[in-house]
Image (cartoon, rainbow, N blue to C red; front, top):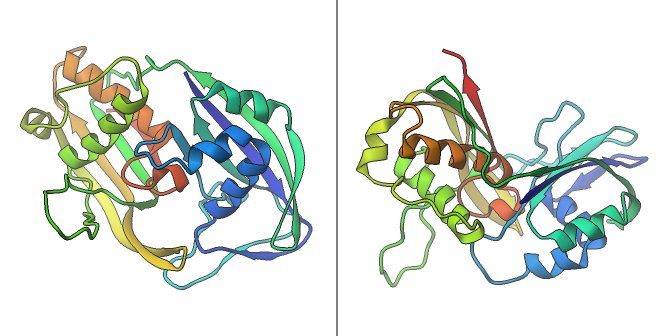
Length: 264
């Protein structure tokens, strides 16, 4: 099961936050859940957690581009969402649906706005073959790393289908009972095609270090047969990405996406 929660945040004065504002989201969750606090520091890949950056009253992500600043205004309603699978986290959050968290000499009022539980078998099913994926925060898609001595990360600035699906399916297979295979090869490369896009590279800072990814949107056309195995698997992965994102560092807010079906 996937738990999807939404929180509302307010404060009584303007404040400058760290450039990538999921720092505040994560700090709040540490106060709400001991289980989350332990899980987030585990040295494992593909954690079943996704915390978003802070969103402004219109739902737009708040984070600094380049060396800009992240500012939230007093007496306005901001939000963030949190996806997870651990039932202990769910129980701990439900015990503190309203709380006050203090950070950076500021008191934040935090309210649990919404929670829903999603069955892992749900998928983004549709008669349409077109899917629009919005990349809301810098997305860090990493090719499969060769066996090299250099350990520098290598990210691509375009959602190349095999790399994109590889990042989602690795997360799925790490955390779901039902495994998915056969969606990252040449077959899917020909069945799932980019038909339109508007993307741009973006640099932000995390822990004082520059992080460069891309944001924007891409429209994909899925040309495989309706109800075929590959179609069903890709649809499941696209819906899964709505809860856990794509690429590297999604547990801390990078690679947040919104995937929707486009009517033909």
